[in-house]
Structure formats: C-alpha cells, structure tokens
Amino acid sequence: SNSLPAKSPPIFEGTPFIGGIMKFIKGPMKLMHDGYMRSGEVFTVPVLHKNFTFLLGPHVSGHFFKANDDEMSQKEVYEFNVPTFGKGVVFDVDHKVRAEQFRFFAEALKSAKLKIYVPYFVQEAQDFFSKWGQEGTIDFAKTFSELIILTASRTLMGREVRESMFHQVADLFHDLDMGMLPISVLFPYLPIPAHWARDRARAELSRIFARIIQARRESKATEEDILQCFIDSRYEKVYGGRYLNDEEITGMLIATLFAGQHTSSITSAWTGLTMIRDKASFKAAVEEQRQVIAKHGHELSMEALNDMKVLERCMMEALRLFPPLIMLLRQAKAPFAVTTSQGKTYVIPKGHVVATSPAYSHRLPHVFSRPDEFDPERFAAPREEDKAAPFSFIGFGGGRHGCMGSNFAILQIKSIWSVLLRSFEFELVDTFPEPDFESMVVGPKPCRVHFRRRSQPL
Ligand code: HEM
Figure 1 (cartoon, rainbow, N blue to C red):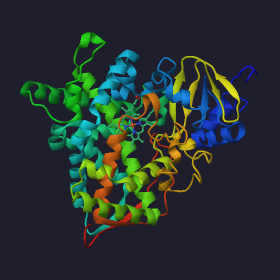
Figure 2 (cartoon, rainbow, N blue to C red; figure 1 turned 180 degrees about the vertical axis):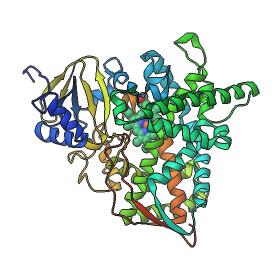
Figure 3 (cartoon, protein in one colour; figure 1 turned 135 degrees about the horizontal axis):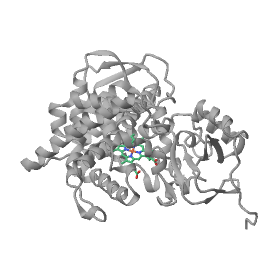
C-alpha cells in the first residue's frame, strides 16, 4: 500500500558537527526531547563523524531489540568496556565466542541457581541492617551500593573474597569504577590517572582471582557461586572445546559485577524513595508483608518473595520512571526500514549508531497513561500497560540482548525491601531527588532519608 520510496530519517539540527555535539553536551534527555518534538519517533543527529539515529518508543524499536548481531551490533558501541572487563571476553571477542560466553552468563543466572543465591541476599541484608541503630539518617544510593557489593561478593566472587579479602577487592572495584568516566567512552585508553589506576586495579584483580581459582582446582573444592559456574564453563563450538582460562573467568566476573552492581543498587534506592513518597504504596507493601508472613512464615524463601506482587510492581514502576540505563546502543551493520506510528517509513543506513531510550520511551503518554505519575497498578491486570505492545517496558532492555540478570536483581531488591519493610519506618528528609543524568549509570541525586526501627517488627 505504501508506494512512496522510503527515505532516510529526518536530520535533527541542520548544522552537522556543532549543532549535534552541542545538544549532546547539554545532555541526551534534552536532545531526545527536542528531537522527538520536532521529528517524532525517528530522527538522526550527526555527532562528530558519527550519525546517531534514535528510535523512540515501541512502534519503532522492534528491529533494535530483535535483530541478530550481524544486523545490529553491540561490539563497536560497547567496546570502551574492554580495558575494564579485560582482554578475551565479551566485547573483545568475535561474535561466535561472545555468544558462548553469553551462554555461560545465562547458565550462571538461571532460576535453579537463583534459589541458591536467595538465602545469601536475605542474610547479607539482615546482617547489614541489624547494625543500624534505633533511628538515624541515611542516603539510600550510598547504603544500597555498600550492601550490594557485599552480596555480590558472596554470590558472585565467592566465599574466599567475602570472608577474607572483602575490603581489598572492594577497593580495587572502586578504582575500576572511577576509571569509567564519560570521556572513557570516547577515549578508553587516554593516558590519565583515573585510567592508570583502573589498569593497575584490573591487573591486581587478575592476580587475586588466579590464586583463588588455583586453590579451588587443587583442593577440588566446589562452591555454589557464579565464580564456580565460570570455572566449570566449557566452550562448545570454539577454542577446541576448552574450559575458560583464569583471565577469562576474571573478565566474566567483572563484566557481571558491572552489569549488576549500580543498576541494582540504584533501582533499590528508587524503589524505596518512590514508595516512601507515595504513602499508599508503602502501606500496601507493608500490608503485603503481613500477608506473606501469615502464609509462608518469617522465612524469606524464593516462594515467599515470588508471592510479593505489590512490592514487585512498586519496583517495576520505579524502574519505569527512573531506569538506570537511560540509553541503549547498537551499530547498524545493514540498512533497515522502520515505520512510525504515523505511517512514515524510513530506511536507516548501514553504519549509523542506533539508540533507544528506556528513560524517554517510558514517559510516552500513548504508551503509559499519565506517564510522570508513580502508579504501580498500571502493571496489574487488567491494565497491564507494559504488555500492550512489545518493548513498551524496556528497563531491562528486551529481545535478543535483554537483561540476563533481571530475576537475580528482582529477587535481590525484594529481599532487601522485605527486610526493611518488616523492621523500619521511613521519612524523606530532603525533597524528592532528581536523577543525576551526568553519571554513566543514572541514579538519584543525594537525598537524606530518616529511618526509625519499629517497636514491634512485623
Ligand atoms: C543486559 C538493565 C541487573 C546482567 C541489560 C540491559 C539492560 C539491563 C537495560 C540491556 C542492554 C542493552 O540492550 O544494550 C539492568 C537493570 C538491572 C540489571 C535495570 C537491575 C535493576 C543485572 C544483574 C546482572 C545483569 C544483577 C547479573 C548478575 C546482565 C547481562 C546483560 C544485561 C549479562 C547482557 C545481555 C546481553 O547483552 O545479551 N541489563 N540489569 N543485569 N544484564 Fe542487566
């Protein structure tokens, strides 16, 4: 029916280079807003020598999520992670090796394994909050970041790190983190002190994990953690079917930690902040804890956590409003066509960097009604606004490269908030925070919260 020849997307900001880069520096949220207002769901912004084509909203983002790696590639756009993750893994290898390594991630994070990790989520949270006094003032983003590195070391890096070298390893991860600056995305090898510290930390982590892996191999001890999953992982179609070497195991661990650490602690923080602001949601979540206790007892088992639908919807709604990964990127390896909700068809040329945005798409009013309001019930039947069209809710990405740790994250966040809801009451001290769009993983700006221990825990 559409007989007109398809054309390239409209260019946003006529003057290439200066126009685009100025918009970029002012921040991607403003850029997307201005572009969307001018051109709608599909537009191209020239930045330096690259063309960024935005696909905003579920009508146009299907190809982004569904295409295979030969059509939509992650390697070029995420390659800046190589000095952090290390050589020989993830974005440093060709797609055949990467596909197998992603199979190892999937294996380590499958639900049979999650059942093993849940008691650790709960125990770490209980130990951590038992050290809080009767009342006090905290910042959630900081608090959860400390807690989640503890759980990560227990479930991911293993008993040895958690029990006897936690502070050393946490400091090394801190250096890796500080070595990931906005400038590092463009120039990951720029000779600056932050990158030198990153490289030293990365090398030291290799030495530490080589020792741990060696000791496990010699003692034949096996543990129930993600480190062990990677030690036991074996290639099938590449490298003659060998096991992962120590360097690859370390790289996979670091990649997992980077995927899960800030994303989970930030989402835990927003879940709390949004529930505390919206008192009805907080009350409903507390009431749900009472019901779950009545049904399952006080133990926070996987079954009990899976029964907490109110808490889960609060978390999902926090993730809809405040996704920590605000932009997802690919490189188009072949031209492809998209048709907008207005019926216009564009062909995106090969070579374009293609971007979609959880932060922007989640606020489109034709996808989520009253999108700026915190309304967890929008996820409940019969509304289920997230399911009206595929890729409406993309806080965990979706399709071919959707988050492999989403269930791990959901169980961890629910464990933390169950422990908190049962023992504490909260009040915001500062006004509700804005997202800090200047950081790589976007979390709340500092916001003090007052906690008070319940006289009677639930
Ligand atoms: C991928 C979000 C927690 C492991 C992704 C993607 C998003 C995301 C948006 C897709 C990236 C893209 O398409 O370019 C989140 C959020 C989390 C979270 C919001 C917490 C609330 C975790 C955790 C782990 C994890 C805890 C591991 C323990 C992964 C992996 C991928 C991924 C391995 C890559 C999948 C692939 O490329 O095929 N995550 N994530 N994530 N995530 Fe998560």
